[in-house]
Image (cartoon, rainbow, N blue to C red; front, side):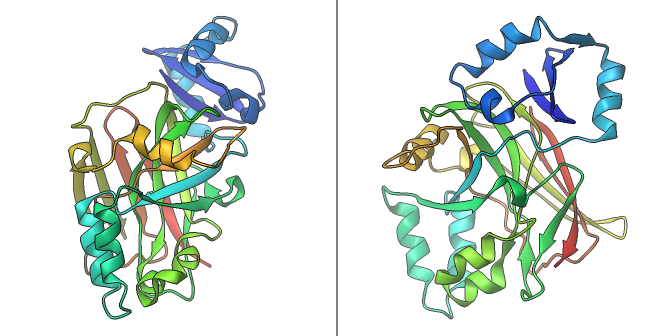
Length: 280
């Protein structure tokens, strides 16, 4: 079951059968436990559409499938991310911190974005004017219920300034949290688990030419999704539910984004999240 957002309306794909719901309060829609069962029941009263009609709506413009939920992120959950963070922060004396958190019981968790800072599928993500080294970080992203349970999965683009974070680990908020620093979509896959070998692929195009193509899979993710969720909900609450990016296993070396680059992130079973790049 896949849930899309089009002009504030929910579009549900149930094994190739499409149902369009009315204008909805997405805080209320997503902020519920047992989301899969509830959506399936409600869709029986929505407008059924053909596949062609649904594809036309999606081509006209998808929105981020969220309301006012917060977006959080986990770091150093892949060995590849650990190594990259150690390399970029070595001169600042912060390399050991990333090595330690990779092996620690407690994960790195940080606030990533409010809804207003998240870009739509097909929209523009941002690199900072005061940064010299910028990369996208493709991440499996969890939709969590108000009780902290995994409700579904989407694709996240955790835009990051490696130059700012590498200068000093205390600059992480400036490297990670700014307007257009995240994108989510194109849909939410409403289910509780994914196969451990689920593939994640990053492609970047510049002037129509592919310049980056890398991939990983969830066997490389050290911490289980529900484990990360349980840590996030310690001494915290999310009445609307929330989204949690689970970290990246793809960090392009010797590469920085430029305006007008095209980023494609594909996760098997969910789809492709595509965004172009601007600088602000």
